[in-house]
Amino acid sequence: MSDETSIEIRENGPLMVKNLKVMILPDGSQAEKKELTVLCRCGLSANKPYCDGSHKREGWTG
Image (cartoon, rainbow, N blue to C red; front, side, top):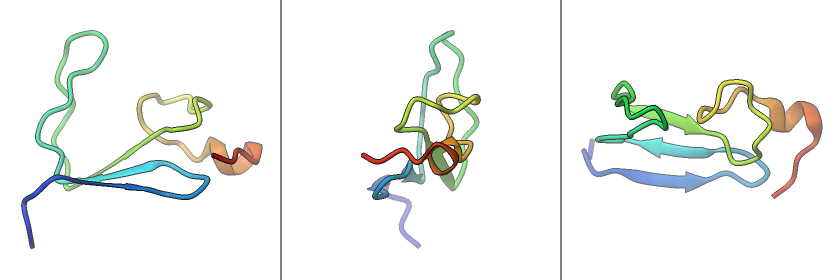
């Protein structure tokens, strides 16, 4: 498996980020490193910057 960071944009869904090395949050803290990080694109998530599936419930397209 590659350790390269990759980002997949899901149609009408989140950003799927594989092998994210560093992510600095708005408060200046560093996010936990994970093999897969799912980021919100719709702005509706109650758990920003992470996706919580709100896009499906609200019928968001983008």
